[in-house]
Length: 108
Figure (cartoon, rainbow, N blue to C red):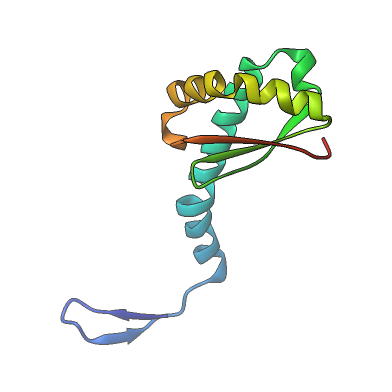
């Protein structure tokens, strides 16, 4: 790793891989994990158990929550209530910046 001293001069410094990984996890991974966990908690609190058993959150990225349901009828049911679910998730998890819920048939 190359660093510069207070005068702009180049200095080589040995950096431990563990230190780099720790910084990466703290700055990149941990905030995403917290966001995901808050959305998952809110999602599980919003859905009735009988519907929750037939779907799962597959992905949260770029403001999009992707949900898989095990049958077309469950997809339809989730799509019917997706506007309400999105509004509630936006209120409960503003840091996730969700703007869309996509529902598809998939393995739960």
